[in-house]
Length: 333
Length: 159
Length: 117
Image 1 (tube, each protein chain N blue to C red):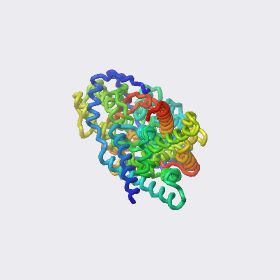
Image 2: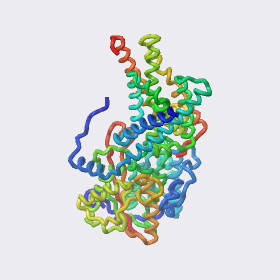
Image 3: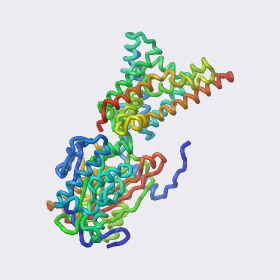
């Protein structure tokens, strides 16, 4: 059901019956390592390119989520997936392996919540009994495509972020046990004219605030309703800006409950500049850490606002600024 | 030249950009410059020692010793890049590793390593000069312009 | 001994200038290297780079600016011998060691090694 301008309320509250978070070797030492289902030994996963490794990562996440849901691959009806590699080949080729009817999506690092929102929409409207939403990112593949070769000696500034090598997947169904997806606010593209690809947190913060504002307005609620409000990958720099912007716009929010997946995923001693980023960041944090905490009863209501920077290497070279988008999904136990 | 179409920023955008700038962690420019000075100086010192070795033991002159010196530095840089720790040194040293010719070798080697997965012809061959290409293009073109200007001035009786 | 000290100081100074360009003016490494190469060419044309090399040795011949200087030197010396066409034919004469070794060792590395990520 549509509520307000851009929020969907899922009246039947689709259940997340299976969730998985998979990470790479660097992530095996991260702050949220206990909430991962699996870590790979290296960045290659036995494949001969980073891009092929990323699709294997995504396949692992999907297979683990399906297994944990207690269903078979053939029982999954639809597959939403997106990633950062050109033409989202990680998702498309993983879909080839899984053989599930596939809808490729692209929201950059907001793909996780975009997928979850769409999967829940299908299930709530009874257009599917269940749907799988997944996304992935791979540090080396991302650096190779968006920035520089991985062995290149370019000095990264303190505003840069570290792309998570990880994949997250969740299966949403009409019936079952687990946290429930309550509603989703679809974001619109916001561009404040920033163009530094080494400071995406600052570019994405306005989009996160825009979506949060729309969410509050459409539902007419106060953000203190939630136990945790987590943006996807604003990092320390973007998070500070989002806090300022929310205050400026007069949005009441409990500052101690407002956090960011990119800030909490890594330990302080892991040198990740401003924090984690990538599609995998919000995905592994939500489908691993947050959902686990909900199942243990430590969290009851969360709002995940995944943020994406919609630039490409080409747009940057053509001196374009960075348009961003953020999608919010509310999950309750 | 570059497209100078400056997009008009709305007041909201301008205000936000100022806020973003004020919250941006400042780059430690003094610390970085000192580190660059030390590492860059060190690499050049190594180069000087190598040059002296070539001059004293291999019979090169002051003029001709530069070539094998540069070759040795490039080989070393390619090796360190291949072993995977050039980027870690460079994160610390910044321009100290990027400005000497070792930086040039690092751009070529890192691109070659990275794109091997796309094959040797299109991958390695086609991408090797991804970052180094501009240096060669602008080097050659500016040398051409400078040489023509100098020769023209000399021909006109100046200089 | 003195030559080593000057190599360190001048080489370090050139790199320090590069760092200011990268951090202060927010230029990418590629842009910074291009600026140095072009400056090297201009200073070479003005006859200012050669005394710097004589004075600082590797401190001036190791930074990428010497690449621009060598290109100009090649062009001018060939033009002296064969006329204006020498500008085209002589450009790479002096720098071939740098570019050849970069290509050869870069390619060989891709044969033997894999990136570490």
